[in-house]
Length: 370
Figure 1 (cartoon, one colour):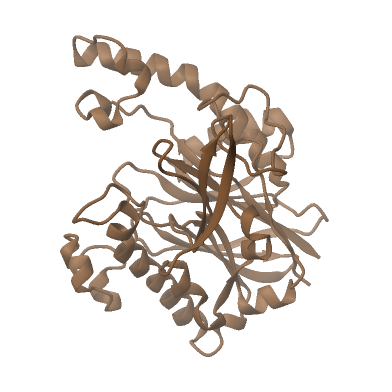
Figure 2: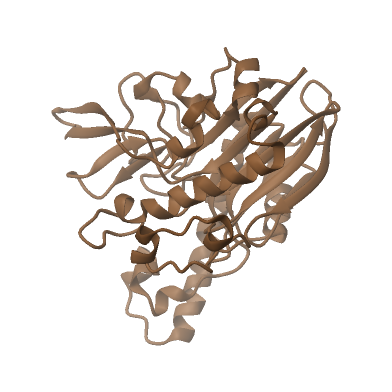
């Protein structure tokens, strides 16, 4: 009995328009920035037209990427609400590739933009085993003070003890696969943001992600018991906005690209894997081939890194010791720089920067659930 599990940041799966770009230039689409727009009313009309025109191509590619995972269950990040998820699943996944995900769950988290974590599940696995939803628990309300996680570093970032830990949520979903129980923890940690206080965006926001990771571990340990949690059947899925390694890119297309693997001293992922609590199974892949995200701020700052994770409990990882996850990169935009030998055939109509399935790559793994 097997289960195909995946995770994917689908990027802004919304059923509403974001008009904040009129007042915040950082949120303004580059297309509209080319035009002299005289009023907010005019901006709203143009933004609606732009978003609608772009969305269909984008969501076709998103659907193709999800279909390529062949997942029975997929955790998702940046979903607006259940209505948006239902419309996408029916209008794109089901109509394009069939065999839809009939079970869909999400809840309102803490993100100011309203983007939440979600999960979609088939009624049964590819092998015909029933997938049963048991319960869903949100941990969006947990505060630093409640978990004793407030630190001077968090205070320096302006985070108060009574503020909520998770920037979105840690959504706990209990299921049964062919009668076998399993728990999923769906997360989307704090983004790296802009440099501040003399630190780059990753370093500056690290205390928030470390606290989120500590909170996830505590939730799991309180659920299953500190001494037994690592041996239970659970997985953490999501975009953790952090990495333990990155592949730095130098050179150019004319003279050739050069790639260098760089290890990081600090990562929030270490909090979860410490002591063998769980395993980042993507690290079973070769170092140069673990990336799920291409980052660039111009030729002087380019790297590939893993932001998207399936972390298996020690017990589940041991049960699946030979399982190696797949990373689906066909929906990446053309601007993404692939190391030699990793190039893939892109989905039809993928553009230089957009349309694209997402800047993130889905990660999927087949698990033995017997």
